[in-house]
Amino acid sequence: MADHARYLLGLDAGNTVIKAVLFDLEGRQIATHAIDGATETPAPGMVERSVTELWDNARVAIRGCLEAGGCPPSAIAAIGMAGHGNGLYLLDRDDEALIGIQSLDTRAAALSGELDAARGDALHAICLQRPWPSQTPTLLAWLKANRPDLYARAGTLLFAKDVIGWHLTGKKASEISDMSGAGLLRLPEAAYDSELLALYGLDDAERLLPELVEPTSIVGTVTKAAAEATGLAEGTPVIAGYFDVVASALGSGAVGSGAASIIVGSWSINQVFSDVPVRDDRVFMVSAYGRNRFANMENSATSAANLEWYVRTFVERGGHHDDPFGFVNDAVGSVTPGREDPMFHPFLYGGRLGAHQRGGFFGLAGWHGEGHLLRALYEGVMFEHRRHIEVLAEAGVTFDRAALAGGGARSPHWPAMFADGLGVLVTVAQARETGALGAVIAASVGVGIHPDEAAAVASMTRPARTFAPDPHMRAHYDRRYEIWRRAIRAMDPVWRDLAASETDG
Image 1 (spheres, rainbow, N blue to C red):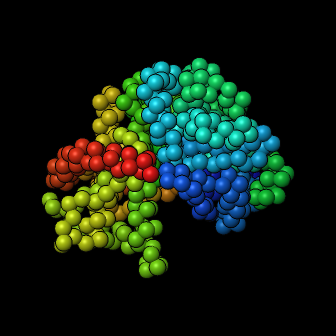
Image 2: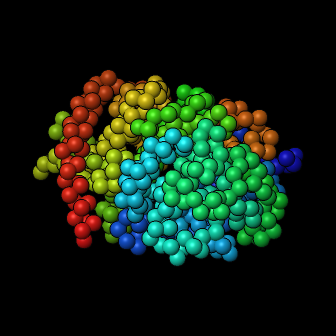
Image 3: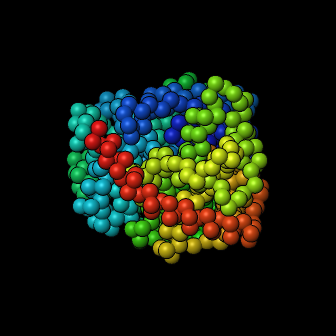
């Protein structure tokens, strides 16, 4: 690393937003620039994005961040990357963008059910994950069965962050946390496996898999063309990075066996780190982020994506609010929690128990207002996180404190609600962009600033707030949680009937 290099650049590619965030070597944020991309829904259950736009937005975000920070490009020691996992990003055989499917997509729901029934046990035995609708290999199998024209043209499979890395360096590579989080690696070895591909019905897909590297590996350096497109210095090292949920956990201060991270983002992410992976098929997935370092996860698309939908659909209508999320938080704060408050099921994009699950408010009365609805939404999201955490506990994975991250961690209400509803100590990191900070933690290790992730986390992360559970509110949420769970069981046949009617057309 050059003596004058005093910054690290983190890139965080979410399902829609791409962020470039500049940090100093101590992990303090200097500047950020974010670009919101377009989501396309060509048919019910299909959620796509332009792979070309992903890079276009990334280069604009990078240039904007450098300008905002007044940072000479030569002062950047390295670039780290993080990005949403799963979904499906394909280049064709000529390295042109082919298709981009986001991790909120449910088109493969029927196929994932068939795969799970026929080969779920065998798949889990290898990759510690059962098939599910937005899982990368399940989507690839769907493409093979339903769009053989696209499948035949496919040349390389990448993840969101890897697309950006390829444009920056000209190298097509991915790393073990994203690949294992997608059920594409044999665990605990974190290696490609031909038997695994065959179980997905993808025995001919090995040619699509890119070079596999460690998260802290240097993938390559910024090319001349990428430097001209972004404003970066040619030759700047680019580090592979992490599956964004692992990056966010590290960026929020969670590191080492037993550390817990809860991410309130588009997805509900509930993970506990360990030296040995949990072998229990009730647990959604295991991601390897290093040799003998694993994140055991219970996840679903049931978290703040529900709030984003509400804001987009109701709050932003006609531009009535200059600060829509500020309005939402004020509305939640205006309501005193009560026994007869309405409830919300956060299944707008399906749930962990099935793509047939649907969202909905229930228990509404004439005296309830928008604040009650929004508080119910916040509570319902927290309850589904709690249900996930109970699954982890049943598998022997427990914790008494957790680092809260994601957009929900910045809410004035959610952190305390999580502490009360889960009965654990909740910490919120000083860093706002924990995913990007996790990416530069990888970069700092990759170029030798720190010897490993533990040292980097200790040096570059700081807690800002801590929330202890309130026993009175804990009892309140315990009572309501049982009602909420009963309502899920009662609604399940209704949701299945609705899903069947949608299928029948």
